[in-house]
Structure formats: C-alpha cells, structure tokens
Image 1 (cartoon, rainbow over the protein chains, first blue to last red):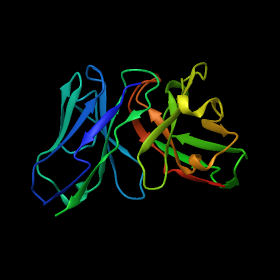
Image 2 (cartoon, rainbow over the protein chains, first blue to last red):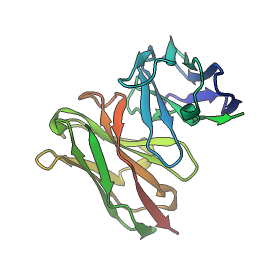
Image 3 (cartoon, rainbow over the protein chains, first blue to last red):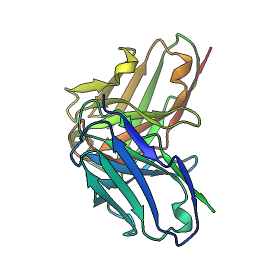
Amino acid sequence: DIQMTQSPSSLSASVGDRVTITCRASQAISTALNWYQQKPGKAPKLLIYVTSRLQSGVPSRFSGSGSGTDFTLTISSLQPEDFATYYCQQTYTMPPDSFGPGTRVEIK
Amino acid sequence: EVHLVESGGNWVQRGGSLRLSCGASGFTFNTYAMAWVRQAPGKGLKWVAGISASGGTTYYAVSLKGRFIISRDNSKNTLYLQMNSLRAEDTAVYYCAKGYQDSLIDAFDAWGQGTMVTVSS
C-alpha cells in the first residue's frame, strides 16, 4: 500500500503569512494527489485535485504543485478562515485509502 | 446545490451491527461513485469503502476484512453502509462522500455532515 506523510504535523502562522505544507508518497503517484481542508466539527472540503486544479469556489490564494512523490500546498496569504487541518490524499491506486495524517495550521 | 445527509449512527455494543444511510440531492446520483470515510475522535481521515455509480463495483479498506458492506439504491438516491461485528476501533464519525466522477479512485467533491458511531467495549 502507498503511505502518505505530511510535514509539518502542525504550524503556527500569522494572518498574511505565506504557508507551505508538504505531502510525500511512499512511491510515485504521478499527479494523483488531492488536498482537503477540515475545520473543527465540520466535514472535510476539497480544495485542490489532481495536484494543482483548484476546486470551484476555492480562493486563488490556495495552490498546489508537485509530481511523483513530493507535493506541496501553498497558501499565499493566510486569512483568518484558513486556520484548519489540511489533509492530502492519493488517488493513484486502489484502494484509495491513503490520506495523509494531516497538518494543523494554528494562529500565532 | 449538492446535499448529503447521513443517518443511522448510534451507540452499539461490541459485536453488534448497524446500518448507516446517506440521502443525496442536488445532483444526478446514479452517475457518480460514492464512498464512506471515517474519522475516529481526534484522529485523521480513513477511507472505508467505495461503490461505482451503478453499484456494480465495490471496494473496501483491507483492514475491514469483510465486516462492512456498501450498497446504494439509485431509485431512492441513497447510499448505505452495513456494519457488522463492530469493534471498539470502529468508533468514529462516518462521512458519506461524493466522487468527482464515476470512478472509485477519485477526489471527493462533496461530503455529508457525518454521523457518529460509538462501539462500547
């Protein structure tokens, strides 16, 4: 099975900061990588799919890049509503049960 | 607007069974794959099972070892998860999720609010 790791596991940042979260796959997954945002007590929300495609309605300050085994989610200017936990997910192989462990973004 | 509403979560004793339902609206249900994803308290997301648009193909997390069954009734726009031989480690919020297209291996572009399953040991 493909294992996903994320770094850091948590970070503290201020409004306006540029934030980068990394996701790594245990083997190459081409660009089959998605990112989700989850706020406490809420369902996850799709932000980016196929590495870099922005889901409809998601602000353009979110972007994704990478291929193979290494991927990044970048928030260009952190906003108050962006404080949440972010998960990556590989959809390269079945079963697609590989979500990353999550990165918690907290207010500094 | 896509709307997914889970129901059926409850407290159940170890070894018991439970059936979850997910009512869908706002999209053509029978043209999208669907899935169940769970989240144990304070933990991350775990994919549980997926089903194709027609219901003809299903896939399960290996760790479930045949205890769960995913199904759908396209005439009722409803997704189901039959959970048997429940264990304490099955305690989680269970989310219903809509696939981006009719593929079992795709992003989930809509999620329900979740339903809580608590298994008492």
